[in-house]
Image (cartoon, rainbow, N blue to C red; front, side, top):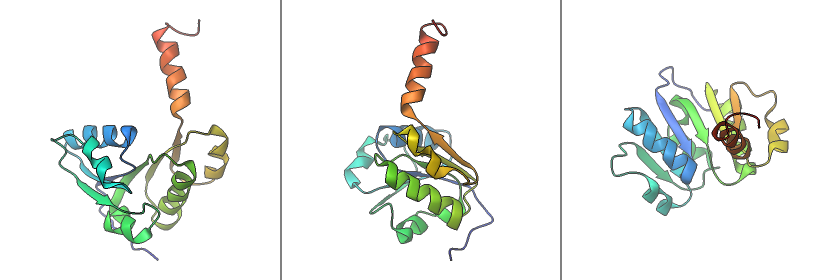
Length: 143
């Protein structure tokens, strides 16, 4: 099994699309230790010129790649690939094998949340719901 570090000081972002790259850029600018993994090396072009973290390219479901990207010493992981099944798999790996303290998982399909139940410290994010909430705020409440 994987070793976990007592010094958890990294933010690991899996998926460098619009959401992942935006979070990576903000965290990096805030001075955090950020690592980004994506299967497509050209995805890193979405990172700002001021991004000071590390990037890893390859199969995001490969445990060796996740270990190279320091999953064992992350304080949080943001899982934001475009594939709900991959995101759920990585959430299980982060929770059950590496005991990552804070796990945020992007899911397009809210019905898949049931597959995350029982996992410690796993927080699903649903872009659809966030969009509705922002729309309500822009309209001044629940009109």
